[in-house]
Each structure stands twice: as C-alpha cells, then as structure tokens.
Image (cartoon, rainbow, N blue to C red):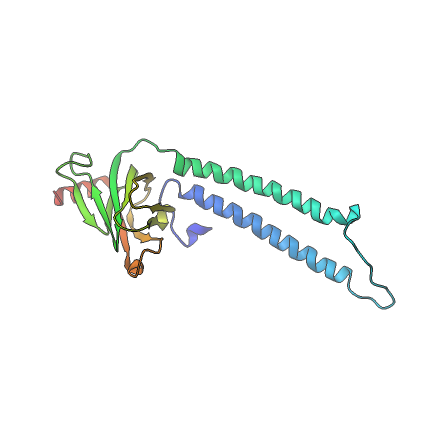
Amino acid sequence: MIERYIEAVSSYAGDIDGLINLVHVIVMTWFFAVQAIFFWLIFKFKAKDGVKAQYITGEEKYQKKWITIPHYMVLVFDLVILVAAIRVWVHVKQTLPEADAVVEVTGQQWAWSFNHPGADGEIGTDDDIETVDELHVEVDKTYHFILRAHDVLHSFSVPVFRLKQDTIPGREITGWFKAESTGTYDIQCAEMCGVGHGVMYGRVVIETAEEHAAWIASNQ
C-alpha cells in the first residue's frame, strides 16, 4: 500500500511497510466495527412512544460483556502488533549483517557530509572520497553507516529505504542498509535542527557495480 506512494528500495523496506499495513488494517477494522455497533445501539434504543427510559447502571453481567469482550480482543490484537513490531525491530535495528562496505555520515547545520571508501574498499585511508549532500552506493551491497553529529540533534532519513536514525552529538551510531534497485533518491533531516532545517537535504545515488567503479575512479 505505502509503496504505491513512496518507492521501496531497501531490503527491509517491505518488512516495515508490512508492519505499517498490519497496524492500518487492524485499526480500520476496529474503527468500522465500533461505528457499526454505535449506530446500531442508537437506533435500537432510540426513544419510542409509550416506552419508558431504562435506568442502566452497567453493573449487570450481560451489560459488562460490551466492555470486557472488546477489551480482551483489543489486548489480543495489541499482542499481534507487538510481536510483529519486535520481529521487524530486531531485524532492522538489532541485527547487523556482515558489511560489504562502510560509509561515514555526518550531520551538521545544515548539510550532510559523506565519507566513502576509495578503490581499496576501506574507510579511513588516504583514498577516501568525501562528498557533501550526495551519497554514492552500489546496488545489492550491504552497507554499514557510521553516523555522527557535529553540533545538534539531526535525524538521517532516507524514505525509500524506510530508514530513519537520530544522530546525537558525542555519540557514534552504526546502522545498515542494502539497496535493491538503482536510481537517485532523497535524503532528509527528520529532526528540527535550527533555522536551516528545511534546506538540509541531500540525495543517495544507487549505482550498478560498473557505474560505482567509474564514479570512484573519477574521484580519486
């Protein structure tokens, strides 16, 4: 459903979309069920000529079931959502698959800085490639990103990856992604970080192996 409006590009985007769709279906099902019961009760117990109004305390067993049964049903659905959410959280946030490459991402007022490995494939060497507001990655490769903030809170957000990770000054946060199709997509800051927050955007360029090798060679 969501991918109809925002393309899903990362390996775990489908898992996150599935969780959102699950919550959406459960909430909408409950919404329509509650509205149907609500209007049924309105018409069933509407005022009628010659019929006195009843004084209902809600303490009788047959009356309490209208509260207790939905209550337990909501708890069951909450458990379904909780189990699904934990599964996705562990996969995306707690499990760090082996990396094919590592990139460094730094947020600052008001730009994203990226440090890419050069021809040697290693980060932190003399042939690293530094860019501003443009991240280059290779399709079908698992990347670890090392996320830092220079000044204030920022949030590294790539909507097509379904990736959003806050970055905190003084902390180094490691995450991962694997792009599954080529193209150029938006990078955002999803945390209010000052008057220039609205212009703190960049792009991720996902390339084939040949295109990425050519980009590295042209920037050495």
